[in-house]
Amino acid sequence: MLDIHRLREDPVGIEQRLKTRDSSIELEGILTLDQERLSLIHSVEQLKAERNRGAQEVGRCRKAGEDASELIASLAEVSNRIAEIDSELKRILSSIDHFMSLLPNVPHPTVPIGVKGNKVTLHSFGKQSQFDFKVKDHLTIGEEKEILDFRHAAMIAGTRFPMYTGLGARLEMALIQFMFAHHAENGYTPVIPPFLANSESLYVSSQLPKFADDVYHCEKDNLYLNPSAESLLANLHRGEIFDEDELPRKYVAYTACFRREAGTYGRDERGLIRIHQFNKIEMFKFATPEQSYAELDQLVVDAEEILRELGIHYRVTLLATQDLAQQSSKTIDIEVYLPAQKRYYEVSSCSNCEDFQARRGNTRYRPGAGKKPRYVHTLNGSGVATPRLMAAILENNQMPDGRIHIPEVLQEMVGEEVI
RNA sequence: GGAGGGGUAGUCAAGAGGUCUAAGACAACGGUUUGCUAAACCGUCGAUGGGUUCAGAGCUCAUCCGCGGGUUCAAAUCCCGCUCCCUCCGCCA
Image 1 (cartoon, rainbow, N blue to C red):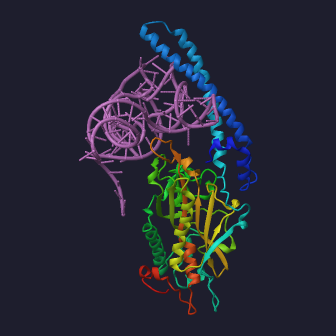
Image 2 (tube, helix red, strand yellow):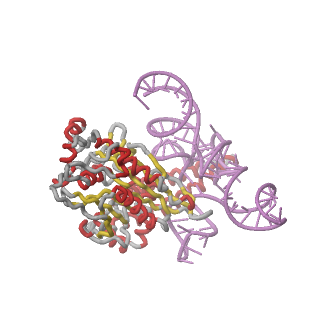
Image 3 (tube, rainbow, N blue to C red):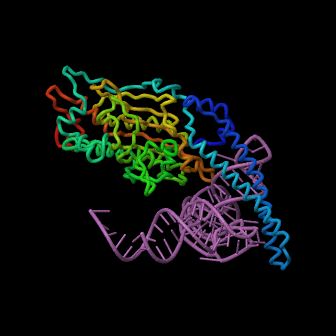
């Protein structure tokens, strides 16, 4: 949620920057509604002040045994007018809220403008693996080694649900534990949150109302299946006020994530690339505005370390304005290379949402004793999601004899050195 | 799923239609005193929105007592719905 005051102060400038994300954005309608709102507030508050004074006078009369029936009658009239204006005000407020809830965050000045392809590669680690034999894709490897079983997963749940079996299941568990422990030892407080969340939580994270079709919804209980621990952790301090010295506050969560992914499949996205359920380690931070961009950079470094320790080649990219999630001001992705498809795929997305989610969740901090509370900045970053990571390991670590080399840091947990 | 009890500002807590403009305490902050610490004493001390304003200072108005409705001239207080917490019963890994 953007700050309406900010729109009022610089409507042209803000609109210009929002248009770099979505050229159809117009602020005129909301500013008109805002003016109406202010003028209604002005008149209704004057009436309320009048009513308050009158009601006190009634109390005084009754105590003194005087007749107040005339005053009461006139106050009833005032109350009726208040009720009318209040309901009009409520109508306008809900229009404003609706409009505001659909607006995206203002992009940071360092974000490249334009379409998805305008992203900038910042740096990379390692090199694309070279093979002197024909590489297999991870789906073929998974079937041959009996470590991925999509056929039976489809029977149990449906298409695009993964099932890991045998050493595949052990490798998945090892990845989860490795990443979770790594970040925990790095100063992030470990959390295993609920995997279902209510609508308010998804509103705060900005999944709702705009992206309701992307998440699974249990109608009977009005609960949503977790699409990303970001949606959960953004709510961890809803309505709270931090002391400044408590920030930054860092969390790492393990969750299964569920996404409907309706209509988003392409030919390139078979196997583990895009599925309805996956495991993810998520980092989340609450920081002051002064800290937040340094914390974003550190978030990326912390996610990169995972891939470095696993010995996987990756590149780091800065997303362009039109590729940002609604709540994000700036997003840096980490992408791994899949040699069978000769393509890079995102395994981590690190974003600074500035105060966009904090405003929705009313999460603030006090910048010093006696000072007014300010909204915190929230940051999230995958650290990282497992499916594409596993695909990268299976495809990049295949050896001429068909076996798969398991990264050293995982070998003890998997119980094998090769698959 | 059923029965009962509860939710008041950072924390504890009084308050049960009309100076509630929410008491009081603790914590916090500023000061006085002080060899240091502590204590004592004095003072300040919730949030949001509007108006005034260069200003988030000051002044002023409105709103907020879990959330949403309702009754009333007037609601923390009465009524209805919801939600969360606690106790007990039922069911259950």
